[in-house]
Amino acid sequence: MERLDKILVSQGIAGRKEARELIKKGEVRVNGEIIKKPEYKVQPEDCSITVKGQNLSYSKNIYIMLNKPAGVVSATKDNVDRTVIDILPEEYKRKGLFPAGRLDKDTEGLLIITDDGDFAHKILSPKKHVKKKYIAQLDKEINADVINKFENGIIFADGTKCMPAKLEIIPDTQNKKGLVTICEGKFHQVKKMFISCGLNVVHLKRISIGNLYLDSKLPIGCCKLMSKLDIESIFIGNIH
Image (cartoon, rainbow, N blue to C red):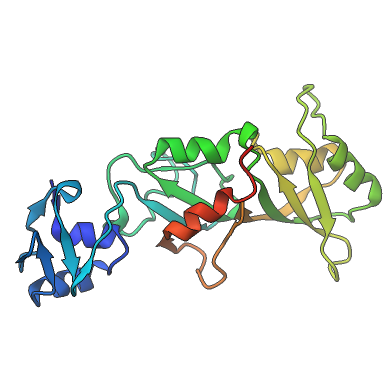
């Protein structure tokens, strides 16, 4: 059983305050009956909910796009640092949330937070070939040799071999900024790949997962609920 106002928020219908106002104004019906109490509890899978006459298509799971800031860790709990779960708005918080994959503490950009384990597995499994793109600022120039090494698959000092990756120089950056495309997510992978080539990453930002790109209007540290189209776009042309 879940509060009616929280259901509306979790489905992206409205923010916390707006959801309460909609309910109090009699704009929400449960099984045809007008409900004016935001705290009214229902089993959303087993009932019909309408908002302003429109049927609510309830999704059991939640999918959140976060523009992760530097300084927070990609974890559910941490005894020292704030986590990506800690910085979510209260109305988005629920049991079972976790980051689908991770970004290093000082890395920014696109991170998906969900409570759907199967969905996360599809994103993270190298066998699914879901590409992730990063913009990396380097301390030295990228040259053809570095690009070739990425294409052939970088081998770390401990013998770990990365899958072939794509590295493109971003124009007008003095060859010190690159667009990196990988389809796996080893620990500190992008940074270690560059280190293996004698370059150090000064700043790193993930901009896409599959064909889902970070919303350019989403400020650092802010998040939004993902639409069904957002979720589907991740896997277009990726799953094998």
